[in-house]
Length: 145
Picture 1 (cartoon, helix red, strand yellow):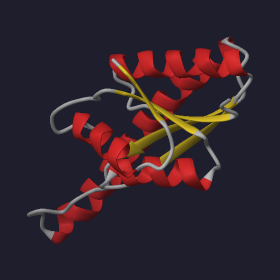
Picture 2: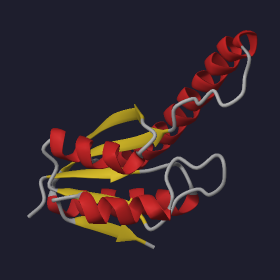
Picture 3: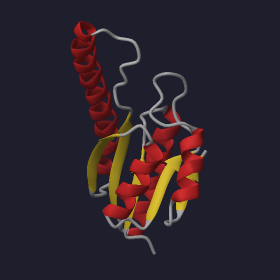
């Protein structure tokens, strides 16, 4: 049925349940998995030039560390289940676009994601992102609560 499943995660506890569910589905179907996390880009707003370089660098470093941690945890779940996985981190201000684009570009035939992710300023994607994926994806989407 499904041979290649894209699992989107932001590292939240609900997203982790989505990872576990997607991995178990992949195992049952003998499908491979692409694990994806999307982080926001740095925005300048009202910084002066001296602040900008250091702040942008620190922000990118922090987001890269968080993305690596999120993907490592998801990869461990897949490995423990004996499921082959590829890890991808994208920076995008529109996470739903990165999710849909990655799924289509990698030849996935199913997207698995949580009903909502982290909230507030640290959000990588929100419940509204799930709705946008559902609206814009031509692929089936499995939403985990």
